[in-house]
Length: 466
Image 1 (cartoon, one colour):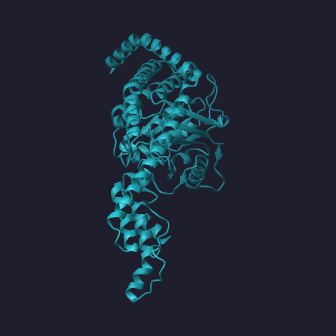
Image 2 (cartoon, one colour):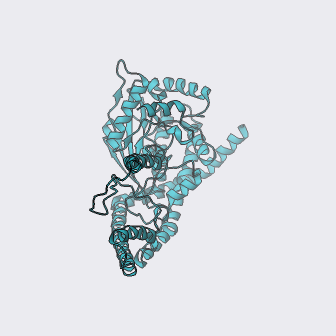
Image 3 (cartoon, rainbow, N blue to C red):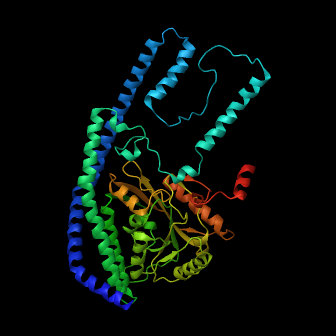
């Protein structure tokens, strides 16, 4: 163990001058980009391209549909008008090749014709009366309010990425195909190498700086170095995804002075959770102590690296002993003003940023003051959601690096206090509701843990009674 630490010190001593020089160059480069507003101009250009491609797709689909209708009409001119209309609808759907179910709020069995249908049997009346209920039941099974929160959000318009192209829009006409190909080359041959430089530099700087800071004794100097190094590190890492972040109501942010007590008022920061990028997004504007699930691989290595410079709490979700340890650690941490403010994602899992799901009550039992933070991403330029059940960490990082950009808004809400007769569950629900309303997300009572486990029978019975 001692030998490993000596080796780490030696590596840090060798890399420190190189890393400092390279980080300085990246800062100059980032400053020039911000000074000339290149990121905003880049996003504005992307918006114009997306709007143009949407018009091309709409016009091409319209021409294709008109051609299908004309072709079908010529070959079936002798068919009955009502039957012809029904077959035409089916034919056009097959020609477009869409596998997506088109949901409608109402369905009239007799909308195709104006004649009045008479009920000729009691059996037909029973079927007719039950069809509306069957339709609603099938719709609930196809698309419920819970499971679709664990999948990527569907876009209203195509963003020139193959991963979001349901109907192969890139082949709809030669203009869109040419533009999509140019965008593909730009993302993989221009953006990806630059972003890899930012990512590698940020990770090396994190490892080197936290290793050196870890050998200092606790005190104002260590606190100041850790704060500034982390702000610098996350700023570099945000450049690896072309992050454009807008912070709102910064006067509500929980922070303190550089050398004095970090927090004048005890409290915990809580935020809705979309992906591990949330940590870097919030870390650009403030430095936190993190409480979260222990991971393996590269993500676990980064967790271990962060723990060198400051006290973070990593635990196993399924271990009862770990949960008791975290609860005691939270209470102890909150009451020490010289410690960093705690940041927790009480949903306990990544949600696709269309809703806020149930907050675990643990963090709301440790303190009576909560500082809510609402995060809302714009999925048009790049989906920040990490579907951990389908992607490993490296796959997610690669998809993010090859997206157009990560754009999000962050709102610091006013601190919320637990009421006199309010329990932790009610307090958590009240905070969750405020975050959902501020960010325009759907407020759901379901547990995000359903992403990994089956729905308990007790919960099913309670919802059936409603």
